[in-house]
Length: 207
Image (cartoon, rainbow, N blue to C red; front, side, top):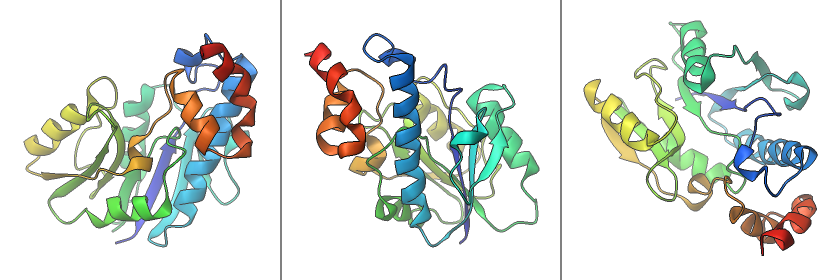
């Protein structure tokens, strides 16, 4: 199956607000953009992903070769519902949704997520606590209503079951590891490479 990958990114001024106590606005913007580059690079390495889009209010952060979808200001779930309505109903491509804040995700892990999908199945990548949703692979694209937000893993599971779909969770380190809290920055500084060296000041402050 071919896939349309969609990566939603919050308005940069509002991104990663839980890190506002340790990162400056410029550092938060740099973090959001750098993580997005990691996620889109991983998606570029997945052969079955044939169409790639970023939902954002800032077209300057969209990588070359990716489609810019303007954030309509309806929240994440509303923006994704717009995508499903606009996707050609005759398209045989599935919809792959990944957030822009899972910088350790690999092409192989994404391929595992899409491989877990089959007819009548929603493939879902939960976060490390099995509370949030860090990836969805579904077809047709409007098979369920999106439920991103608090407790979204359970909400997506229930939505799939209501739609008569089986749920297949896909647990992988990179898919599960989102960056939301100050404590997460140390892992990113240690394992994320030199592009995250700008986090050193904030990590020292957290300690």
